[in-house]
Length: 148
Image 1 (cartoon, rainbow, N blue to C red):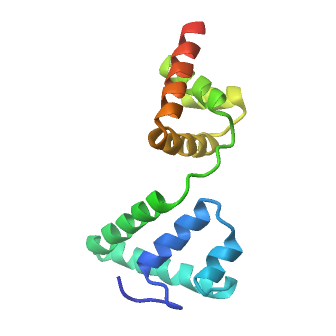
Image 2 (spheres, rainbow, N blue to C red):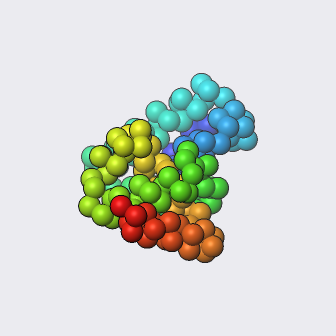
Image 3 (tube, helix red, strand yellow):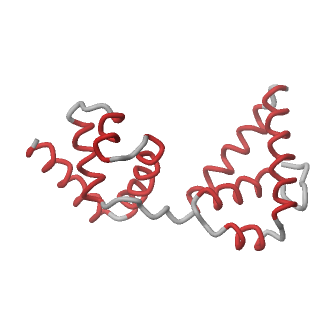
């Protein structure tokens, strides 16, 4: 992908954006890319315009390349730290599997949907990469369903 701004093309933008979204320290991410706040703002604007223009003009190859770059960057980022314990997440999943709506489950546990999705992402990456956590999680979910 071309059209680099401050040396940042869309692929690099996807990597930086993903690292920032994963909670990595903003200063170190930007500094490591040779950027400051002002240049990052210019990069965000230019890349946003580039993606919007590609969407308007039907340049799906640009959008797909960007989407792939984000997916690769996400797979290379360490998983975010979960905001709640595995036990709480398992209890939430057990209730959802029993038919309670995610909105009601979130309300019960004091979370909004965005927070639940972030919790889900954090634990899912750990569950997939560490089979023992996955087994413990499944056992907790089943146990939570049995006790309700």
